Amino acid sequence: MTDIAENLKDVQAKIAKRADKWGQDASRVELVAVSKKQPVEKLKAALDAGQRVFGENRVQEAQQKWPDLREEYGDITLHLIGPLQTNKAKEAVALFDVIETVDRPKLARILAGEMEKQGRQIPIYIQVNIGAEDQKAGIPIEEADDFITLCREELGLNVKGLMCIPPAGEQPAPFFALLGKIAERNGLEYLSMGMSGDYEYAVQFGATSVRVGTGIFGAREG
Image (cartoon, rainbow, N blue to C red; front, top):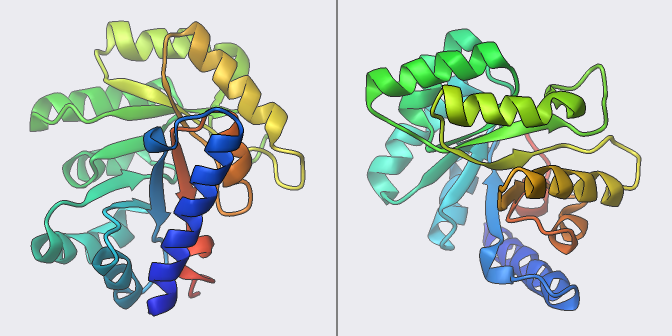
């Protein structure tokens, strides 16, 4: 488990180095430790090393792990970074502190209703299908501006920023740059982009949040 503490230091050092090289502010880059399918022992190792921001892909898995960890460690921030089904919106609003995968009007409307019911106006990211891939979630690029406006102005959601997952096997830089342009023209400062294989490129292009799993915890179980 000492490897996890060292891995965290290594990732933070790489973030700082890339940010310094390209004139970005490393202090604005939040490291989200992706804890999906990781055992509680590894999560505790990261928590003991000082990590407090984590990302989970599934509501049900997060419900099984995090309530007890929150009682033990307290100041944890939990991001939902996987696709959200509308029938899990109630549970997601109750459990997570940030929802990064808002990608369609129906889901946005249901989340707005749930947040009002629960009195929790939690931040959201709008997921953009930056590679226009049929198999991936995300609002289409050409609909992103109107969807951002809907979420902000009609639904009153706290749109913190944009999130994307570039196409696998392709150079990620152009996709990160495009997400930045969409954010800039909509007055959004926060960009959740970059994972274990490409987070350094994401930092170069202005990421304010990177989602790193295997780079911290090693290979997932199952």
